[in-house]
Every structure is written in structure tokens, then in C-alpha cells.
Image (cartoon, rainbow, N blue to C red):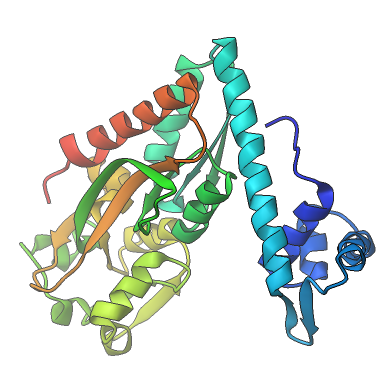
Length: 309
């Protein structure tokens, strides 16, 4: 959107609530802390109530502050709906589309997606952001993203799921690693090798801890990372192996750089992968076409074109 209709004071309030302090919000949006404080203080004075509880540990939203956050979210959704409707009425394939995806997809899905959008829609400005699954889903719900390609999205009535698949977890290794020669591997065998593991910033870590948390203490050697892309680079170094789904390494598997060895444990969970948008925001004809492109690419990359293990 080229015009932001959400009042500045509400934008500041959102950032402070998200980051926990005026100073952190100031650094992120490039506005002085005093200016942000004045805007929030003006709202509190007009309301006669505190919007934040102040403490040495940061600022926490009060019930009154939460009402203002809900107002800001509704205002942003109305803003997005307005521009979406105007673009649809023009009947011209141009505009601004905001897309969220995972960092492990930058050299696969995201790269091909960007090429397809710019090739088919030369007048559409695409903004692609890599972020965590949780932030991607929240961003779609808040109207910050028009669509997201995301893993392990939680169910929500305000989300439209355009495409979804479940993928079993397996072990990634370079082709000449001993693990790559196996038909399958158990978690007990997995932890006998140096492993790259996901941090709590990634949703798969929470699922792993809930089902198989013992592996994080049992590993002979491990490196914890908050980036799937970095995890894959560690595996490509030949020193580490990692547990994830094929979708996280689709590009490397197709190129033959990595091998995917199924994990044989019977109680191993599957990782879901989805393309989602906000059910409260009408998608323009152009957005609908771009969503269809995302689904087409994913079907090709992680379903139709699955590499042999």
C-alpha cells in the first residue's frame, strides 16, 4: 500500500506492544523515543487510563491498551480491504502484494516465485519477507501480508488455506555422508552424529520438543540455529546432519546436493505446509492469480517433482 491510513499514534502503540519498550520501537521505526512517548501519553491522557504497565522489565499492554490494539488491527484490515477493492475495480493487473515465506525457501520457492511474478505481472510490485512461521501467520491475520507460504500454521477461522500438505520428517545429509547410504535412520542413530538443530524461534523445534525432546540432550554434538538456511549450510559442509522435512530443502534435493533419509520411528510427527491468506480481506483478481502461481510452484517443487531419497 502506498498510503497508510492507520493513525500514527496507533502504529507507535503497536510497535511498543510488540517490542516491549519505547526505545526498541524507536530503533525499529526510526522515530525518536520522545516522539513515540508523546503520542502514547496523549492517548492515555485523553482516555484517562494507562495503556501500558511500566516496569524495569519493559512495557506490558493493559486491558485498555489491548482494546486500542484491536482497533489498530481492524483499522489496518479496513485499509487493506479498501485498496484491494479499488485495485479490483480498476481491472488492471498492477499494485503492491506483500508475501511472507520461510528463510529456508529463499533459494527455492521464493526465487522462482519472484521470477514468475515479475515475468507475468510487470506492473505489480512484490514485497517478499522472510520471517518465522509465527510472525508470518500473525502478519496475515493483522493485514501486514497478503499471503504467506508457511509451515505448521495454526488453525484460525480468519485464515483461508489455499493449499496444504503434510510431509514426514527425515534426515538431511550430503551424498557421501554415511547416513546418506542408509534406507532409513532411527532417532537413536541420528543423535550419534553431530547434528544441526532448530532453535525455539522455529515452530518445528516446539513440535520436536513435545514429541522427542530427549534428542536435544542425547546428541553427541549439536549446533542450534534460528535459520533453516544456515542449518542447510551446516549440513552442506559435511560435518553435520539435520532433521526436517523435504519441503525445507526442496532446492538442494532437486539439485542432488543433499539426500533425504526417512526417519523410521513410528511415532514421528509430520510437518504441515500451507499457503494462506486473510479471510476478512477480499483478494483482488491479481492476488488470486498470484496465489495460484504460489500453489503451482509448490506442487511442482515438493509434490510432483520429489527427488528420490
